[in-house]
Image 1 (cartoon, helix red, strand yellow):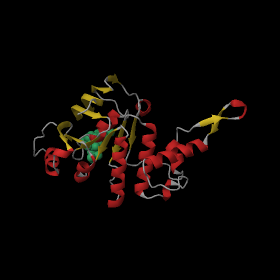
Image 2 (image 1 turned 135 degrees about the vertical axis):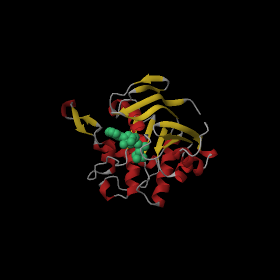
Image 3 (image 1 turned 180 degrees about the vertical axis):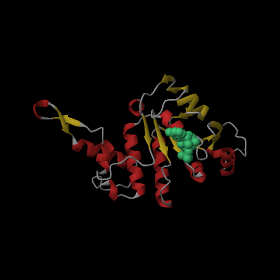
Length: 253
Ligand SMILES: Nc1ncnc2c1ncn2[C@@H]1O[C@H](COP(=O)(O)OP(=O)(O)OP(=O)(O)O)[C@@H](O)[C@H]1O
């Protein structure tokens, strides 16, 4: 693979006496979509939480651009250019798409007498619109409440928001799980576009054909260990399922 941008080495994590991750190595490169797959309970979400600052590992190390880093919180990972799109999307349904992009990170402009403190609504709207156009999304009315959008459009808003704030890594947890075929296709195109901007995308998915369609590389977790790594172009659904269930030995890419 190209030089890893984010690299985890020997990550271990237990909840009480239950060892959930056991010496997991994982790496992602700029401009690539890396799928993270595994059966229910394999440890995917736990690994993503560790790599995005939401959980601390018990052991192992994380390197970003070759430098060892420690995330004390999701905000500290955000500050280093790492964002996560969770399955619930964390959008405020009553706010518009543009407002959601900037929610909690509003831009301010000088108020009266040069004091900071007035929301710069126009700049936020313009930047959000630019981001939506740049990413090729079909959200037309960026002021309509996101509750009124389709599931695919809401997913697009959440992805565009992450692109606005991340310049290194974006984790996406099952971004197409609730979508129909057409909307899934659009979201997959969007995911590709995010990677083409030079961002490393990590995609958690249970949908193997989708993984093979959009990912460059696939890393397989089973029972808390990374058991295989494949180039998507050189593997099959059967191989992936075999590695996930333990029926097949994985071959390092
Ligand atoms: N907060 C917690 N306390 C105790 N055990 C937990 C906690 N979170 C996760 N686990 C356990 O850790 C293991 C790995 O869970 P994790 O959610 O990381 O798996 P996953 O691969 O993301 O699964 P899924 O595909 O079902 O989301 C599971 O056995 C789960 O029950």
